[in-house]
Length: 232
Image 1: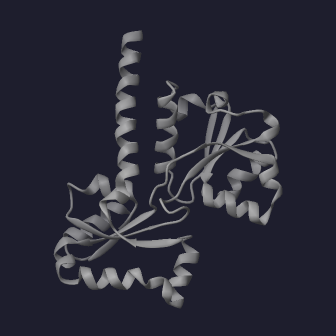
Image 2: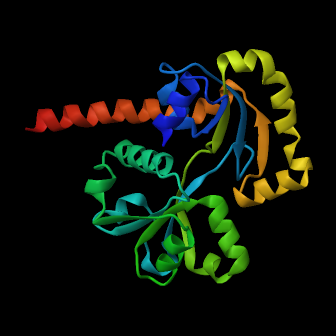
Image 3: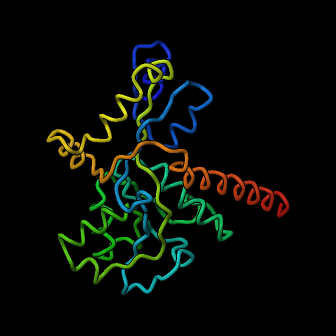
C-alpha cells in the first residue's frame, strides 16, 4: 500500500522507495523525496503504449472504435495507459474511455489482451509496445493479423527515490551502485523479472512526457466540461 510506504518514509522507518512517475508527482508536496534512478523498458525514451486492431476488421482509427470493446493489458500499472487513452480521445473531441467504448476490461497479462484481438473476439487492445514485440517473436502470425493504429510517447517505468536526509549521506554511493547493477548476476535477474531494459541516473527531463500528458489532459478535460455546460 503506497500510503503505508510514504508514512514509513516520513517516520524514518524507510530510507528508499520505488514509485511510478505518476505516484511521485502526486506526492511531491507531501513528502520530501529525491529521485536518484529511473528505469524503463522499450525505446531510449521509455515505454510506449499501442492500440492494436485486427487488419481484417478494417478499423484504422481510434474514432472507429466508438461503442466497441477494448482490453487494456496493464502489466500492473493501468494509470498511465488509461491517462494516455483518455487524453487521446479528448484531443479528438470524443468522450473519455468509459463513455466512448462499449466495454473496457483490464488484464495484468498482456497476452490476455492481445490474443482475443487476434482471434477477433475483441475489437481492440491497449498494451505496452515491448510486450507486443515480444509476442510477435513468439508467434510471427500476430504481425500479419494485427496492426498498430495509435502509439503513445515514451514514459519511464519507475523511479527509485531516497528520503532527503538519507540522500545527503548516501545518495552518491547508492546511485553509482544502482547504475552498475546490471553487471551482476542478481542485477541481470532483476532486469529480466521486471522487464527492465535500462537504468539511468535520474534527470528532470525523464518526467517531461508524463508532465506534458497530465497538463494536456487537465486542459482538455476543462474544455470538455465547458462544452458540456454550454450544451445544456
